[in-house]
Image (tube, rainbow, N blue to C red):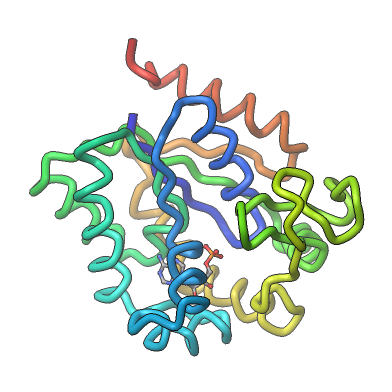
Length: 220
Ligand code: AMP
């Protein structure tokens, strides 16, 4: 069962991805995580993309698609996967179609997480993340048990550099202009579904499972 998650920043894609990955033992490929690791490790890729990520802009399509496909080729041979944060432009979606056809890698479901913009701004400014294990908290809806400390691995929590108010606004503008048109591109495909991601985490998770089941997933 290979899945693609779509949705604006703050829609809870990452949180839901972690839950599904655990439940169905999927490989999790998050382009945002790949890019943050590359920046932290000061790799060639990291140096190339740092400016884009820190300003809330999209990394150029050719670069993102090349990174994703290199990783997917090795991941897909071993495990079903969940792609989180890609595609983010219509050109990336077209690249993914061409790639999956050429490599005979089927995408079983494309799930869109829909949330209104004012809710996203609230969520992103309260978001705290653990860079070590990638667990995500929210100071309002899901605070850590100990202030500033990850419940899962005891690591220190941070506010992502691109979760500051100014960059959040830019990321939402970028989403509307460059990413939202993907929804029209996928509309009408029988493996494309949408969930109301403004609901609490547990409800959204149940909705995702329900939608997958309706598509006959995971296959028996
Ligand atoms: P995320 O963690 O998914 O919010 O991604 C963080 C940042 O990484 C984004 O704001 C972009 O700068 C970059 N990024 C992640 N995925 C993509 C993508 N598919 N295309 C272009 N840029 C991306």
